[in-house]
Image (tube, rainbow, N blue to C red; front, side, top):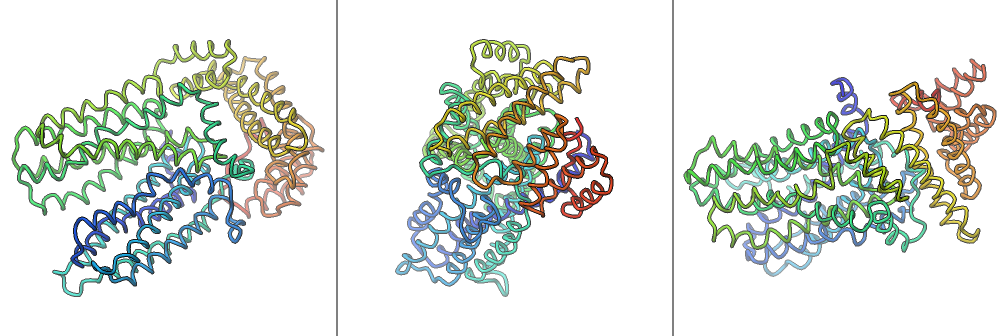
Length: 621
């Protein structure tokens, strides 16, 4: 991708929103780390109690997948106009601000810790809930080409919060400084910064597919369907391998981080030496995250996962060198901290983007929470015995084991992120012959990730997506009328497959303009998409404007201009602030020869959203 295209992406309202949302997620998380520990230590609370309170407060992060279906299913009634994701964001952030203000009014001591602990646990719960919704919003709002950049900016926003709340703000409370702040003032400042960040929940753009990706129709569906969907797409064996990969991908990095400060102290570095590297490590991690976003734009997901996995192991080598010389060396310390942090930042943006790619937007809150909980489970399982292992083996042996801890994830990468295009095309064709459409789509998708101009893979995936879309739509039509929710779910899922099929077919035709049969297939796919949209609109109570816009676009491409115009009129009747609706109607009127009406609609569209995506390809192909 050209540098100008990358700059256009990061300057967009969407990306600025993600940066600030990452910052908003980091603030309450950090409030439960260094500031809380130091405040309690200053109050002479027993160290065991400090660690117990910290553990209880952060406990919800590992188990957030339990209540994530609730956030997928329901929309807070007072904020419903904001949409499913942003309404929960605003609600959780508002509650966190109140809790931080309550925390600032406390006076913790050995005899007065009950209320303080309860508030800390509540902050942990609502902070984890904010993360659930923030992860879901990021997954829903980003297009595929933006996932690496979006993940990098979100993680960097989080790290800026770590730098501010975990380093800079703590400095304000240093008792050695004249006019130092009290800890209640520190928590007031954190609450104020979060309040400023909350504005982004109102300003951030809605996901373009939010109206299409409807919430599950019941809480039981919100619990069951995300898991069924994942297994349906990846199968039991494939899903198990993916979850094992998520569990093991960062084992070496977790091992090093669990003993790094202990090791540095053992070989003679002072606490000041170690502390001074904290900010350098955060900056290096932020640069690594940006680099991860860039390489994903350039070389795709699969190759980036391999680079990130190998980079994590290479990033441990400077620690091994320090273990070999076994004495303080500031230059090597800076190299070790910055190198490991850069590799961890690169890995974070790539890995977050990978987990996002696994999610169905209808269930992104639950599915991403599940994947991130698996990742945290890997950390929990590996960290607790590491202190004893390090003491028994010594630094050098421990770091070599950490380096080779990457081997299980590298072996799993052979399945998760294959690199052989020829084998992928063969395995995709074999799955197609066996009528395993999801596996075939998955194999061809990997081939496209490695070569975005592979016409064979694009063509096959287009036809498979259309076939799967038709099967899902026909399944919906077969349900009795009294379970209309199931019918609507099927039609909504089918829309996504048809849209992907149309996009793939366009790209394949652009690559090879001599493929006349693809033009004929494209017409058939659009007719199938139109039939599915007819079904969806007929049965959906109060259809949203995007459904009419989708059908208007399909009818436009099929040449049914008057029908397309009626659909776009209906969309504008439902929402006269929808820029996309005016753009579509403007293009239809232009084709019909109504230049005056077309100009008025296009001007109105630009007025409503000057930076909206260009839809010329959808409408004029």
